[in-house]
Length: 112
Image (tube, rainbow, N blue to C red):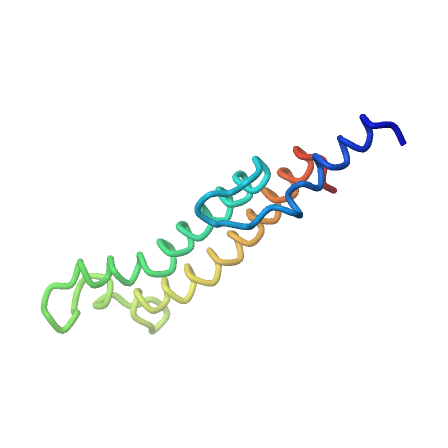
């Protein structure tokens, strides 16, 4: 094997020897990977906990009665229906987006 090929192989695998630090990634691949992960986590937090906070903020009285709790859809309060629909659907969509973005990242850095 030539020295150039060995150096290329070492550069490709240098991330295996690097310490993983979520706040200060070592390689560009790790930085891009963590950017995707943090973005997905932040979106997940907003979709999971954001809607209940909106329901709480729009309440008319301290007991939580508001426009989203007073309205009904198919016999259920709208906020229950939307929470049951939004939370799992957003988690599923975020998983699909994460897989697609990770595949794109792996192709970009030649790691298939």
